[in-house]
Amino acid sequence: MTHPPSTLLRPYRHGNYYCKSNPDLKPETAVGYSASIEQWLFNQQVMFNLGYFRTDVKDMVIREDTGITYDSLELKEYKNVEEAWTQGVEFMCRAYTDEGFSASLSYTYTDSENKETGKELTYTPKHVLSILPAYELEKYGLGTSANISYIGKQYKDSDNTDEIDAHTVVDAKIYKNLSDRAKLSFEADNIFDSDKGDEGNFRTGRTFAVKLDVSF
Image (cartoon, rainbow, N blue to C red; front, side):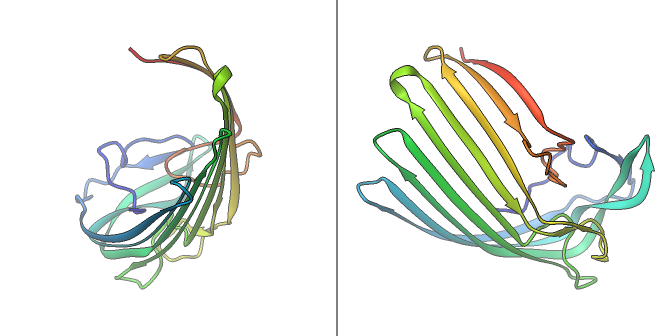
């Protein structure tokens, strides 16, 4: 399902923007439908998946730009849309080889509408395309992967007059498995500083990180 679920933190958290409180905000309720078909080919090395989804929402919680800045950051507000829907199709293909290479491609087309205005919902791009190539040298516990995502045009306001341009975001990482329970990695996110508005990431620039993951 491509419509992001509501969480307790979503109306309050902030990263590269602030959120204005809304005491009149109501909880949203939704009914969703989805169906998909999946097929594996070439000795389970290639997988195709095609799906359809639709969600009808009452009192949908949306994020909207107020046009005001606070401490040099945009001030946004969560508000309710009395009735809205999203629907679309999703396609995914994954491929694996015995040599350690793998790749996946996914595409989502999303149509959305605020029933009050007939306009598109805010921060809901019609087109999202992602390519994820990866390679692992299992013998040495070394691996690398990348995530290349194209996000189509989307709107910041309910009137659909303030746009976020389509953009492509590139992330990459290399890692070393130190043991069955520990992994050391170097990760570079938003490499070209091109992220223009991903609600789930709040990225304001390039990020480089060294991580040590240990499981117990």
